[in-house]
Structure formats: structure tokens, C-alpha cells
Length: 128
Ligand SMILES: [Zn+2]
Image 1 (cartoon, rainbow, N blue to C red):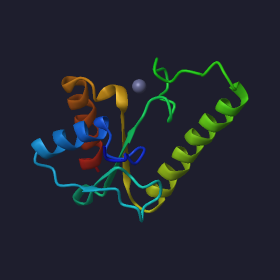
Image 2: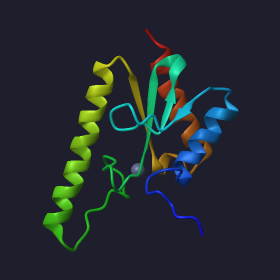
Image 3: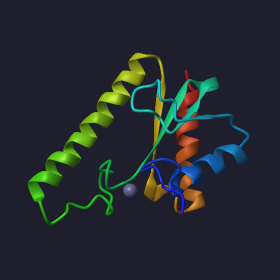
Image 4: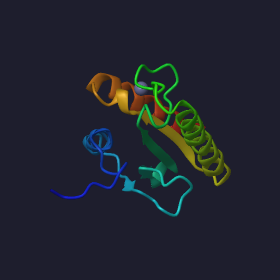
């Protein structure tokens, strides 16, 4: 078995890439020089897309964003730090003139949900 780099080339991310590719959109992966290392970057639209796991990145209102019952303090702090870091990265990317879109893991399970989320992100990116 190949070792898996945590958070890279995950199922949800591959689903998004496959969709963008089918839609004829050109993209690049893992721009390590950008804040937060966006999973997918569409240079033409100066658009950075994060594919976020609902648990680790605290998808608001999502049933997957559970609060673990053990080591509560540890988890509360760790997960709050994750969300804070995400917000900082988005702010920094915007400051550098990037548009930022987020696709949540739970939105990649079903093609029509994924389709409408990406349409939303692309419409925002193509807008004024
Ligand atoms: Zn979710």
C-alpha cells in the first residue's frame, strides 16, 4: 500500500477535480506558495478552492462536524484553531487578490449537490 499524505488527494478532492475537468476548466493543484495551500487553483479566474473535511474544518451546521466526547478540551482547542487558521488563510488570499471558494466534503457525495456548489463558486468568480 502506498502511504497516504493526510489531506491530499482525498476522495472528496478527486471528485471535485473530476467535475472541474469534465466541465473543461483548467486548474492546478496544491499551490504550496499560497496561504493555506489551496487544494485547487484556477489561474484564469484567480480562484482558489479548498476542499474541506467537515469534521476537521468545522462545517457549520453539518452533522459530520461532531464534537468528540473524549479529551474535550484538547479537541475544542484544536478544532477552534483549525477554523481560525482557515479564516486567516481566506483573508490573506483575498488580500493578495484571490477569490476563494470552499467545497465541503459532504457536498461531494452527490453529483447534483457538487454541481450546484461549483456553479455557485464559479458564478461568484466570474462576477465583477
Ligand atoms: Zn458537511
